[in-house]
Length: 240
Image 1: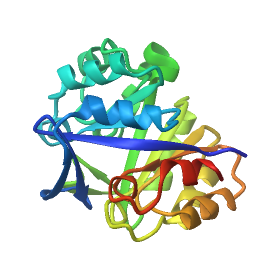
Image 2: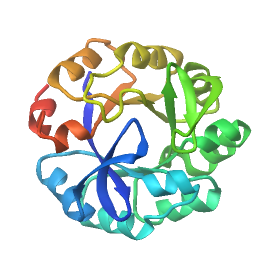
Image 3: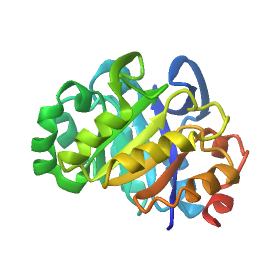
């Protein structure tokens, strides 16, 4: 089993930042040139990029379309994008930027019946982002916690034909405190589609823990703050 290490680029006010547990007031800026950041990760050997429009997530509509288009045009590797994609038009707008995959989150919870139509229309270009705290789904930029269990939403999305689920433990995100491998394992157990793990992946040990789950459908791990802080290198993680 091979897990693809996916560097994250989070966009806020046109800059590359990282938040702690998704809180906009707790942001650290790492670059005012997201395109250069994307090119750096590609040059270091990244095989995929994960881009989040943070302002879009909070406002409920894409905000960084220009920056996302520039990133997709600047690198020769696939780019996936999430944040504020609440309508079909939003998804189409992002895909027209040249990205490989659009990620819907809030909409998957609010309109699960529409997922089947979205999968029919966009196929493998659509992924579902499931963000959870204490096992319960969070929406609208992690500002609201629902009464729906992440594993239940994952199973529902899988039944509707979704090709990929990106699972984030929001309590771990940006904390450099380690991945919640048990929660990732539960998601993988609940579905047959591909799963990408996110939140707290910050060391070689975290990637080993994910690999040791021996889940064939666990295909990727998103890494953010640990790379930007120099706690671990992309090369070290990919060597696993």
